[in-house]
Image (cartoon, rainbow, N blue to C red; front, side, top):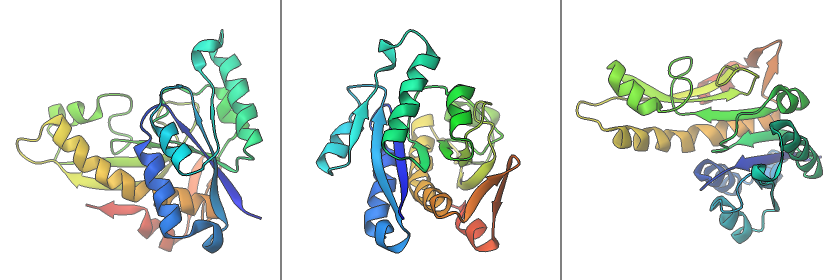
Length: 216
């Protein structure tokens, strides 16, 4: 039986595209029994929905503005993930902070990607903060989602150099290239069951850990 991935987006969904394209290139459904079963956006205008439509991926819009509370929105989101038979939920530029209601419903089955080497620089404006701090190594982290913002157990990381004269945009572009390498790997390995969350810690074998530690 195949494992179903549901992707949550709010905008262009570049990491959604990267995961989908890698799944096609590597033939995940046949080789690993893993497929993207649906895409959900909280914004009707999200351009990632156009990509989903063009590639015949089922999608649904749940506009968060139509709900009186965050919890009411998440109840509908939980239902939609159930409709797509989600085994793994992948956040790809999903610009909503999830409450314990949603996180607890899918504990150990939600992945997020963050443009910094956590635990450094959680939250927003990571590239500006990295440059202000004067660090020489920056990067990206894939982690399990917990009730703590950007605080879940780390799955994988990719590092990039911070170069003299870098602007936030230049650094962001360098990091984004590694996001598109790391996230598909992490998604596949978690969906396969080769990486999992146990008692708040990420468990994997040595082979998986080598795939999920990228030195750019």
